[in-house]
Amino acid sequence: MACSPDPRLDLAAYARSLDCVHCGLCLPACPTWQELRLEAESPRGRVYLMRALAEGRVADPAAVRPHLDRCLDCRACETACPSGVRYGELIEATRAALERTAPRRGAAAWLVRTLLWQLVARQRRLRVAFRLLRAAEAMGLRWLGHRLGLLPAALAAAPPLPSQRAQRPLPRGLHRPPAGVRTRGVRVALFTGCVMEPLFGRVHRATLQVLLANGFEVVVPAAQRCCGALLVHAGHADRARELARANVAAFAEADVVVDNAAGCGCALGEYGHLLGDARAEAFARKRRDVTVLLATEGLSAAPAPCRARAAYDDPCHLGHGQGVRTAPRQLLAQVPGLELVPHARPEDCCGSAGLYHLLQPDLAGAIGRRKAASLVAAGVDLVLTGNPGCMLQIDSHLRAAGCERPVRHPIELLVPAT
Image (tube, rainbow, N blue to C red; front, side, top):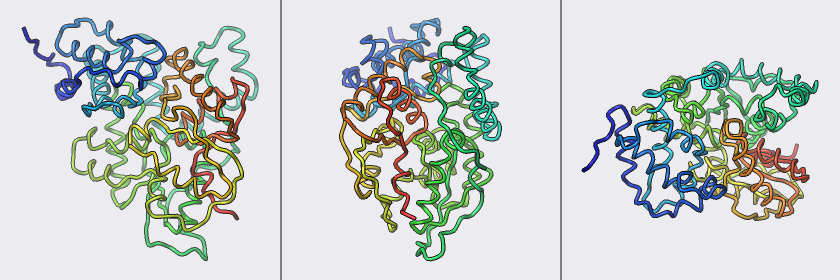
């Protein structure tokens, strides 16, 4: 006898789950299946569990939730899927439905919700928090807390924060190309997000410098907010919609919206699905990863020479989430002296996945070590990737493997010689 979907859950997500034919071609692409070799830790297995939950064949969400939690939402299964299953939309809708119908309880759940909404989603508070964390790390407080057993293992094992000179946030408003640079008559709006600025402010400055040097006018809207990606992944879609509406309004006058973080770009590109209105769909259509914009329009300012062997590693939400793979490589091929070296399975997830490396440290660590081993075997001088979480995770595991190599964003190598 057929079961009818649970009316409390997302019926559209349930309908999307029916596209899965359970062929199993997604399994080798899934980082958790690669590591655990368990059906319930594969996309196919999770689709089956989500469908069983929606149909009422699983009465207790607690039986399913741990398997959903262990998904990195890396979208590698979408690349592998011959049926076009929109797995990312499916698992995010199911997580949101579970938060509505069976919200998590306890101090840990409260802390995650509070941090995501009250800290991560508010850039000023986040900048202050990172300053305090850097000061604490410099004084050895994290090491001391670990030795005394006061820190959770996940925080003790978290990658060190990158050093960064104290500097003001990227100036808001209009930036024009310097004197002597031929302008293209194109004005782009730069999305700065939440985490990239306090962790890798140099990437924003390099992005601005490259765009200006190549003749683009750049606007940095003051009213922009966090993209909301981490809230969506955690099942708090309503909070993410609030941020999305603010961003759609902040960039309403822009013809082109440029971003430089794969996770943010993927989230921004899915605002049409998240909000379900014409303005959000129009916003999503006009956003571009900075490498796509530059590869499409062409470089007019030659990058400074960089004589090094480098490996480019595809961020999941750029390659799988946005289908962007060739643009960064095309641009890097134009850097004088740079030799791009292939490494094994560059599209494998690194294990960062937002807060995943904190919430699932053992599994994230195993996935990260596999990524580091691939890069070490390539014998490169430099690693390039386009997402802040990936940059942190890869740097941390290369250090742990005794192979310290600079990890940079591709845009940093496109800055012209001065």
